[in-house]
Every structure is written in C-alpha cells, then in structure tokens.
Image (cartoon, rainbow, N blue to C red):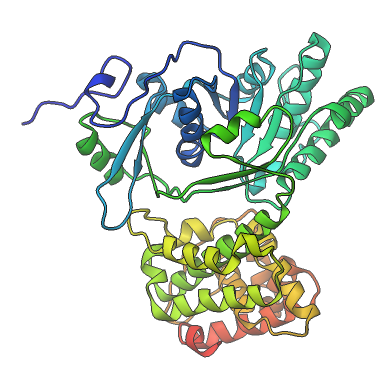
Amino acid sequence: MGERRQRLNARTLANAQARVPDYDRAGAPTIVHIGLGAFARAHVAVYADELLRQGTPALIRGVSLRSRRVQHQLEPQDGLFTVAVREPGAAPRLQVVGALVSTGSGPAAAMAALTAPSTQLVTLTITENGYGRSADGEQAAGAPPTSVPALIALALDQRRQAGLAAPVFASLDNLLDNGAVLRARVLDEAERLDDALAEWIARDVRFPSSVVDRMVPAVTETVVEEIAEELGLTDEAAVTTEQHRSWIVRAVDGLDHLADAGVELVDDVAPFERRKLWLLNGPHSAVAYGGMLAGHATIARAVTDPVIARLARDIVEDTLEVARFPAALRPATFADDALRRFANPALGHTCAQVGADGSAKLPQRLLPVVAARQAASLGTLGFALVTAIWLAGAGGVDVPRVRLPALTDPLAPQLRAAAVRPDGLRELSRVALGASVFAEEVARMLDRLTKEGLPLLEAAR
C-alpha cells in the first residue's frame, strides 16, 4: 500500500507541483467575499492572487452563510487551494492561490468581516435567490440577520457610527444591473433600521454593477483525486475551470487598482450584462434543458448533439435578430465562443446543475428576448420549447419515454401543485409566467411535449 499523501497547507506548500504564492500572506484582508463557493475561488481569488503578486494589498476574508463545508475544507489548508485550468488538447495548468487568508461561516462571521476597519471591497456570489426580502421576525433577539442585504445594512450602520468609511459593494451574480438590485435591497433593509442610515447609504455608498464570466463546475471526488495526483498533495478545496475569465465592472472610486489584474473598468456595464445573459447564459440554459430531454448528463455531451446544438444556435440567432449591441462588443463572435466553451469536457457541468433554479434564471436570460421578439412580431418557438422543458422538470410533468431530472427550483412546490390541477399544463405555465401570450404558447408546447417527447426537439424548429 502506497504512502499516504500529505495535505496542502503552508508547511507543505513547497512540495506542490504548481505555481505557488510568492507574496506575504500576513496582512489584514482588504476584500470580503460572501458566498465562498467554487466560482469565487476560481475567479475573484485568482484576480486577488494576481494583484498580490504585483505587490497590491488584496488578501481576502471569505464567508459562507449557509454551510461550514468550505470552511472545514480550507482551515486545515491555511486557506490555500488549487485552481486547475483544463482545456481540450492541453495539459492541466495548476496554480495554488494564497489570497484567501481567513474563512468564516454564518451571520456573525459575516458581520465581523463587513465591519472590519481594513475592509475596502465586498464582493458577493449569493445566486439570484440571495436578494430576497428578509422576513419580519426571522431572527432571534440580539442575533444578526440572516439575509445578506440585511447584514450589509446593519454592518454599514455600525461602520457609520464608528466613523469608518464604507467599502465598495460589488455583486457578481447573474442579474441585470446587479449593483442596483443590491443597492435597492440594502436601502430597503436600512429603512427598517434608520432613515438617516438609508440617506447616508444612498448618498455615500457605492454599489457598482459588474459582469463576471468563467465556467466553474461543481467539484467531484474524482476531480479532487485527479488534482491531488497532479499536485502531489491532497487538496480538499481544489477547483477546476477553463482558461477564459473576465470581470467587467462599472468604474467607481476605489477600484482603479483592479485594472492591474485585467479587470475591465467601464462607464456602462449594461451592454456587457445583456451580452452575457442573452448570448451565454440563455443558450447555456437551452443546452441544459435540451440535454435533459435527450438524456445527456453533461453540457459538453449535450452541445455536441447536433439537434441540441441547432436549438442553441437558433436561440442565439433569434436573439441577435432583435438585440442591439455596440459593434465593439462583437456579439456574434462572443456567442460563437460561448458555444465552443460549452463543449469543454473537462468542465463536467451537468445539465441538471445548469437547469436548476429556472424560475430565477429564465426571467433574466430568455424572457427579455421573448418580449423583444413579440414586439417585433417575430416567433418565439424555440424559447417556448426551452421553457416548457424546464417546467416539465421542475413541475414533475411526465414526458413519454424520457425521465427528466427533478429540478431544484424555489418555485417547485407551486409548480408541482399547479401541474396536478384540472387543466394543469395551462395552470403550470400561468404560475410560472403569469397571464400572457407567451404563457399560452408555453402551455401548448407543454401539451406537445407530453405527447411527443424527444422528437419535439427536432420538430419544433
């Protein structure tokens, strides 16, 4: 039996077969990241690592609100973890990132991080579902709130009273104008606390919108073992990703240094947001739902299926027909590159993973394009098919000769309840989409889906 492999940490770092940190990790963190999942480790932390290598303070304190899993992975490793970049036809490229020097879990840890005097930038990946309003009476007396907007409002109140400047808050979630969404939710929570606090936040606190792009799949035990073989050390917090990465953020005071690591600072992020949501995220959802119907487990396998590739291409072409982008953004080239990136088998994104939470994703990714096409009296057949497959998976609708994954979705209980009512398919579509022309089209597509199943992918073109 072979010798047990050592665990990655500060003591064993010199043995890592990878690029390793060459900077001092002993300073006070200037960045707080809330939502310390695989994406944050493969994106924000990599930019911070680059800044630190240039001598710019950018150490990170990471916080997970709902799980201690990442903290338990990282603490024995002194916050060190490996990012493995994998592209077809190329050897894996490993980098040990040292930017993350402190981890915590739960609201109290978040409050400590948000109120620390050294904190200058707060980034968030809390998913589309993390911006909801906190329920009245949800927290115990004297305990910190559990919703992120409420935590930020309370932390800002404490900073204001202590005479500390507010950090910059940058949401990295896939929401149109995510900075404005976060700002509105924080102001909503601040008004519950103190009108003067809300006025101060509205006047002095910056919430720039940003657009991030890097595909980072969920990490499996197999991937962890593969990276350990390549690294020469066990790394329970390792992540794998693609070569591509980008971060585009509205330029505000306090962010100039990010440009040194390749962050694009722009006056208006809206065109970049639309480009990503409509020409990457929308087709990604189309491939996921089409792949589920065809029985493919992964996005890479699905997008190489000619029928599903055609569905995704139809979504792209229909979007380009009505969307208006500045020529400098090269939307057609961007979309082509996105479809190429989907086919990277090393990423391992599953169709069910990408297809989850459709009720939060599709209103951003597909429905604005549907509205634009309807306004131009153009068809929306492909969009209706994609939406119908999502509703079938999330609503538990039977499809002949196909076993769709039971998709996780915040609206799933309502969808499943609607599906079993009289005229259930129309009810299901109405609950998801309201009373609309598109809802009626989706209901008709659902009806066809329950009768035709997989052949509908080819027929509905």
